[in-house]
Image 1 (cartoon, rainbow over the protein chains, first blue to last red):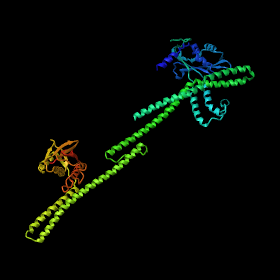
Image 2 (image 1 turned 90 degrees about the vertical axis):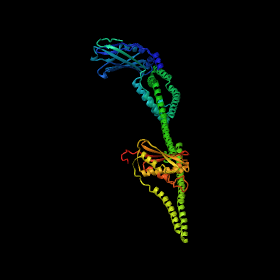
Image 3 (image 1 turned 135 degrees about the vertical axis):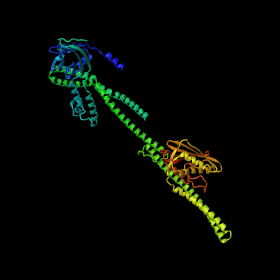
Image 4 (image 1 turned 180 degrees about the horizontal axis):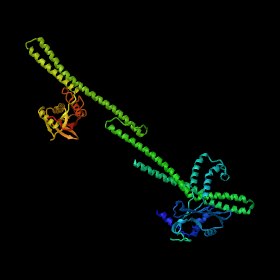
Length: 219
Length: 405
């Protein structure tokens, strides 16, 4: 028990809590802190060819249980051919924006200029202090890529036996029937194991005074 | 059983441990090989090169672009797999370990069931052996299996059958011997008076033929002699009749202390070589007995003791006690005891230690029959050079109501 704890302490890098703001007519906005983009692992992932997904879950008290949580999404993918970053954001209320950027500094600038909308407040939040919980998860690939990979893996055997050009390599129709059982088992195992999981997770909490045009950060 | 289970558990854990070691050393290199990061780097570089080539050969741009797309897809799949490699590995191990563990547990379960079944069968063998030791040949049937336990069970069964046959044969031979002895006694008992009667008749005929004056006195003497022999024959047949026509006791509540006091007083001087001593509790001990028949039992025992004493003097000691709802009458003498071979069969008819011509061996058989008819029993407690001791058991009566005055 002690060793994993010490290991975790050694790896832990605290990230400064970002500023939270409330804009008219009652939207909670946030700009991701610079420390997030300075993470080496994230920078490497941004150029891996996969769509890095930043999933932000915001939770505020609300009478309606379903309205307590809101999700915002940033998808970033580097296009090697065009040599540019394709960025898409999904915000509460169904807002979708898409932009192409040259590099990471441009991305950071764009995100700074366009704070992410996290939560749409309503009247029951106004003129009071509410606790805000934000959880930021960085997932190395998108759901589409997950599904595509699962599908590719699931159809790998069929593609080989069907004479797929790239997969055959002289093995067309050579797969014995007895191999299929084992392959099927392994394929099911692999495809069900391909799951999107967060590689980095940040958790922040605020006590937000609503009613003021600017958010106040109270420790 | 517990030791075997612990042993099986340790064996399973050791198997699992070595399996994981072997699996890890076999599977890890293959996963590393399949998801080699250098391959991904090469694919990424080839994508860059395809883009550059398309700039140099604009006429082939579409082809390079298509190749680029396919490489990108492949790289994307490999990157996804690489990212989820640890999850795949963990799941792979879990499934394999679970499969092996389930198999081992199944084997252990089957082994447990087998051992349990064998244990039950061994217990059955044990019970059968205990029955055999107790002389009970009604053995439980062992389910037919041709393993070691089954074979041992069959051997025990066969031995039991042989023992039962031998025991029946032995009992038959013993009975035969008893009957032969009885026949000899009966023949002697009948032949002796018949011989005497025949002699007396001859002398009677001779006297009648002589027709002398003294013939009247001779006839008188011979008649007397013949009548005595006939009385002896009659006494002999009465003994048989009393055994054959033993009546149901007419039981009445009786204070046993009072009864035994009376018995001692009446029979104190009945035997010339033996006195009677009694030891009684102060309170009344009420039992339901047929006085006449119970007295017969005591007289039989006393007669046997007096005969066993022979020429020497002795004492018959009668002690009354109450135990577990039963009146226990201990009847013991200080005689020479009975032969060891007689002790087991002493209550069987026609068993006697007396010489031929001195009793038919029916006394103890009749006594036991009487005691059993009283819902009690008679038991030989000990018999050795210091004396012989019998216990008579009689159930206590419910109350003292109806006691005779």
